[in-house]
Length: 228
Image (cartoon, rainbow, N blue to C red):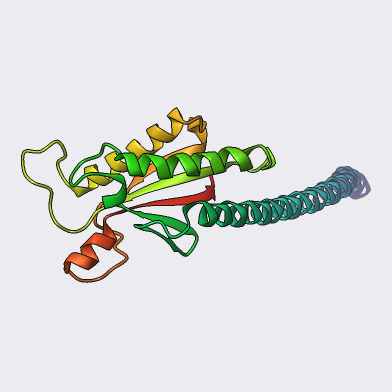
């Protein structure tokens, strides 16, 4: 009986060993499968990293080319801007009420408009017609890739407009004067998409103080050849 009991116990232990061996085999198989998956994921990760690096290089090359083209366009526009202002200096000469400030031509409002008005005076129309001729001359020679515009900026002094008038404040008056210049230049054949009207009111003075001379300088129209 003792031998039989021992044999039964041995058989139970063997069954337990077989079960443990099976569990061990399953664990080894899972580990092997996991290793295969890890290798596959590593390969996919390396491929993805290589694609990202390639895309970053391509993006950097595109940005560098874009920056180069933009710099080239700016240089080209600067050349045409210099030619534009050079021709205007020749055409306008020492005309009264016209001066150059930096990269802009500045027209005194007294030359272009009657006091408080927005309708162009004959003398102002004549000067703007000369400018339009110059623009048409250089327009055909500016490369199509340069999206240039002639910006017309209206400015006033700090004296409030009279109450009950057509315009609520100096800001509206400056905008209306700039728009009047733009609309007149359109009638002279300048494409509307090459013009922009902007009003700054009293907020961009070029002369400090409240004297008549300072206020006269601040009442002005500025022309600037720039890029959109």
